[in-house]
Image (tube, rainbow, N blue to C red):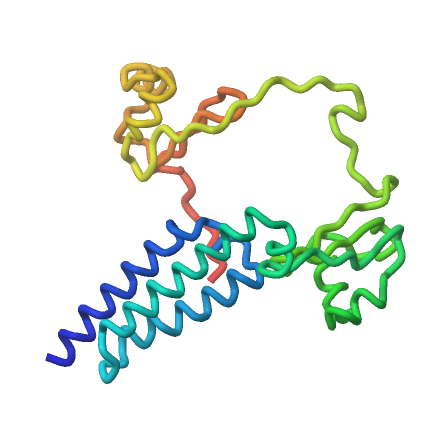
Length: 234
């Protein structure tokens, strides 16, 4: 009976944790601010207890999950309506480098070391401090940088090239299955897709993945890649 109860509790805990991000928003898993960090840790602890701590009543654990989720949702709403509340709930960015100068006082306030700053810059592909005009520690712990003009990469606009209009990529086949919704949504048909494949000497059964790219180009990945000695990094 105990094993059955743990099994049911585990299934319920996972189900609830999958539903909670849909209620609170995707930022819960993508943009880990102070608020999201506290919410995630708390919900994880409650869910763990719900799963294994059978000495606690199931209703107590479920009530705690509902209350924490509701409180987090209300805090998110408050953050949307008030800039001051948003700053208190989620924190605010901190400028670490301004005009190429490291702001030691700002770093000291948030207890951020020079080693951490160097690591964050390297993760952004910057190994020389002199390349940086501005660096900002964001609420999610990431460092955003603006390079000095002389170190910025040239764009098409800089060299006078006019780019073509781009569209969002459309996945046509995934894991060998046609994504009918994407075809219908963009006015495409199976017959059109089969025709494109026949021009390449292939059929639908040959394709593992297919996408129409940003320039309307079709890209196909086939089950048979004709790679006889694939690289294996393990």
